[in-house]
Amino acid sequence: MQKIKRFINSNLVVTYSLLGVMALVFVFECLSSRRLALFGSAIDSGTLLNFGSLFNPLVVIFNQWWRLITAQFIHINFLHFASNAVMIYYVSQLLEPTLGKLKYLSIFLLTGIGGNLMSLAFGSDMTVSAGASTSLFGLFGVVLALVWDNQTPAMTAIKQQFLALAILNLVMDLFISDINIQGHFGGLLFGVLFGIIFGGQKNQKLYATRWRIVAIFATIILTLILIGIGMQVSI
Image (cartoon, rainbow, N blue to C red; front, side, top):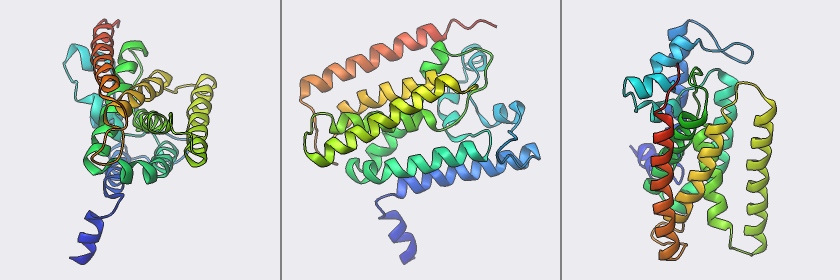
């Protein structure tokens, strides 16, 4: 009982829970596909679709909008899962204690949805997309929003580090095939917006009300635009 209480009260309980769900889903993917997808191999598209990966025609034509969420927890092989998990754990050590459990969870899911909306709007309609990297880039964006105007040496170092990570990963996306760069960019953009809206300590707001209102309207307008573009599926 004490171990359960310590886990619930942990500063990273949401992070551990999210990573645990992703790991469990990946195990079931391997069992379902009867394939141990470690590095060179990958889970087949049929299994990915059955587990809830993003496929634009299914979202638009069959109204399976829940895939915008479920795709965040699905990975194509162990390397895909491990690389995302390590980076999410790294970023979350700063974000979850700063934002609080509920706010952190909300931002994780919402930026993932935002990234997948960008993929729906501008990605290939015949590509199966999956992975938590949309949420990971969202977390990058939140960190940048939180530290952007903070000129202390420590915060400046964090800003430079995460800005470099985001840019480096986006540049690498340009040279690696089968990478969902639209989803990554979308996650980063929504992360900045949600960082402005929700950013700050657990019960504090970092940005002035006018900037949070602007960010709220920008988020709503961007979401509607992406949905509108995404609805034009070509098969």
